[in-house]
Length: 584
Image (cartoon, one colour):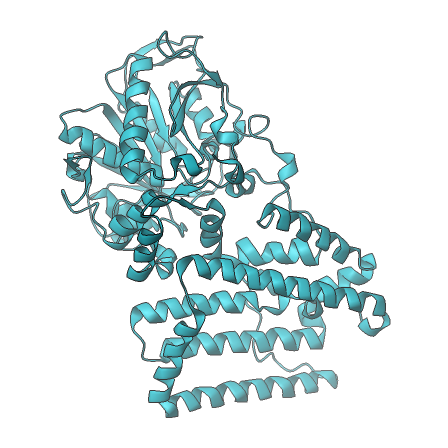
């Protein structure tokens, strides 16, 4: 490690790997920005214009930056002479990119890290100080962070001491393995986040016993085999998001929300959405609500011979479900006894960091593109969400897979996350326009399904709302504010962690904590200040809440479906096995 020049055979490999990595980065940044019509030059043009109007301030900021870089260089020379001056830019404890001791113990790499950190801090501080519109500042700050994350010295073999040390130890085998990983991922069209060879849908994920008892072009309805002698006569229907696959709720037996509900004595049904292909490229938002959720409600009630059902919606599945209940209420129907919403937005005034991608021009472009139908690639959508946490969900895997030549660990959550689904373009464009951009769902009767206006205050059933405190897709305060528009009694529970890990938090693991308090419609931060922190999973208070709204207990039947709904195939069904590139 002390003398890299003694390994000339590795230098050529480093150069080739570095060039391959640069091309991967350019392609990733292109994929992140192009689907959203983002022009980097236009974004940074405004900085130049604003800086020109306040040249003195801009010059002062530049002088400060150059002074810091000169001081860093001087400290590096002093260190080379055997002294130990304090760092010009101390390591950030939470930044795992530079956590290895090699970054600090070797002066060259310590200089590279500190110079990068000084540059990053200066550029973000400059944006913060310039007189920009809030929306422009937010977008510039976000995409500047994207650029800085991409050009981090940790992402390049010649400036990453961990990678170079590994190259010496393995005689360059890490680069050879990395190139193999890169070629494999290029063939897949995405970065591998987990060892996908370990998992198989229906074999070791999505394995709870059941059967498909109804299907239509948009979804399959799965009924699960009861695990208790007696069950609630009122079934529980789960509506997952149509982004990714339903088995996030049935990963493995020990962290399956489906299995947990079965063990609590519920008869469970779940919607398995179709991975959209060309044949369904004209599917609309109305279709998902009317032909999707309403049909699932009706068929679940018919199979279970129950006038009412319990219903659970996760993320956009919760949005579909709540709209369906409101529309049915407007039509004089009340098929839902209780409603559970998991990380669901109904009110869209604060949608988190995803807002940097969305504006009028973006939505108009999508409406024009999908006016006659079309598909939004599941891979594009997955990359967009990953970009919100780029260091953790993109660049860490670039370094691990391609520079270190390592295979990612097997992790069922990440396997599911990689199993994305296409969306119909018309549905997606409508979603962006009417909910994300115009926030019309919480405006009574501003939207309609068919000819029926949507008024969320008509949702009168008792409702359990769960949010995750570190959720970057559905900010917890937004989920909290959304609950205020529901017409019935609300129980609000806040869990630790993020959108997925916070939701899939099985009781058996006894991990994390959750907060419980009375929902009175107070501001979200006031609620949290007065809420009680309870160790363990939110699944427990949810089960207790369902028990507060009991139904008659009946003996569980061994046969699934009924005469009109004979089992079509065993769970998890064939819809869930279709990959994006296979969808028809």
